[in-house]
Length: 362
Image 1 (cartoon, rainbow, N blue to C red):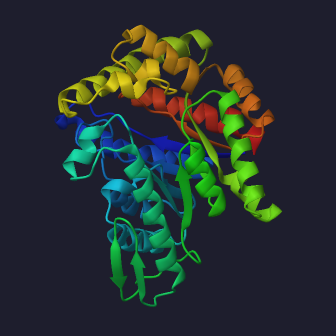
Image 2: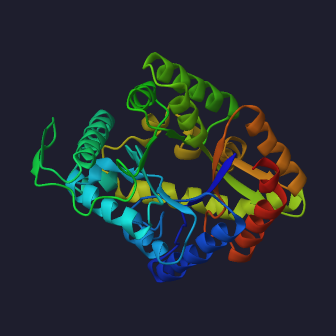
């Protein structure tokens, strides 16, 4: 298996931003020392849900502090980026990282409508998906042109550029990875030969989605080696917390998990457009109880813990990772720090996982 750390650090107030941002350097450096394959950075703006907000300059800073670990985005919200600017930024980043960049791209959160409003973008989910597909098509074509001029005409962009400089280190372009779980996104990723990132979901659904993805790659006539490569790189997200005992782990994740949910729901109620119906958006969604204000804090948190968190003693967590491995889930994106956790707890959990659990699955 491959293992990555996922960095979505909550900052409870503007005064805490600098502290939380700088903690990420310690966590990524620790992840590299422990032998993790990836450090995944995310993108959420304005509310402290993600303290650093913009992962691109953070990735540039991490390029100077790391030597082996791959730095990936999980994800860049394509709908709020101009694809030419993103093309040039990621090309430079791949040079700064000497070929260690993974460009993870997705639609973004359907619940944080205020993020799209701030960038003058529609909150329509279908438009976000179309912008994602179009942006990736354009960037891929530009990279494959090897510095030559290209013209691109799409639904949202009509572009002409002299060529990409600097060219990325990876050829023909940095690794691209698609985020999503819908049939449309997985089928598109399969046709274009890109691995996928699955959000928090139960093992049964994760296995079903990976099977669907594999079938679509076979229908697209991808080679066996490409199919195997994409399945090796396709990753499932989980939060991880390792303590001395199951009871201690359960107790220590309660407060930060409640704090995170309260922060998310409060921010959305305060900043989303007045006509935003969070309850309706959550209906039928995997995270319905977590994301809908209709459910009590305890209902939301218990749903989150049962669906998206692996916690407990070394023995318990190892058994749960083994279950993923037995179901042919080959890569895990692990969030060790959520809800402004105590950093001693975070680092102790990472060390236990990296030294007592992860080696059994490498």
